[in-house]
Length: 235
Image (cartoon, rainbow, N blue to C red; front, side, top):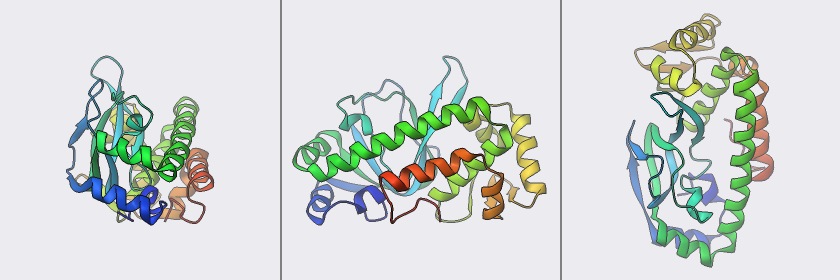
């Protein structure tokens, strides 16, 4: 449980309540945890792996609008009294999450002012990062956006290599596959990443930081300032 930064910030008393009310569950690669309009019957605190939040355009197109890993939780709407999913939640890298049934979670939340404070601050971070992402999508080129997104994946992955396909990258960034291919080829030719058979490796972390747009650093700063001044999101 301590591998989730939100849970790790709680008092021992609050952590015991979370432990009693929940259980560890596997998160399987490409598993859909919920779909838009579905009731959020459970909340998840990832301890390994991470989840993509996908919005659709009303047709077959989708785009990632958020990511949840060990820094956060899936199901913030339950805490805010709106337990209906607005986006699709798709496991992007396999792992383990601490899962609580929504009613059990709300019971703990009602008894824990510490948990409420943490989630209120987390909600602010999520809102700020979504606002930054909107500006990033509108104004920044694909290559810096790709570098930013790969850094976000690396932060939430246990290592430098994680599953990745060009088709999935295209979905995540909301651009044509050929544009992703060109951007990934550029980063690989610069020795920053290596892509082979559906797996991507970050080869040069500092170089990838330099290649990313300013949005990545701003997201990290927001999280660190609001939630984890002693536990930075980046490795």
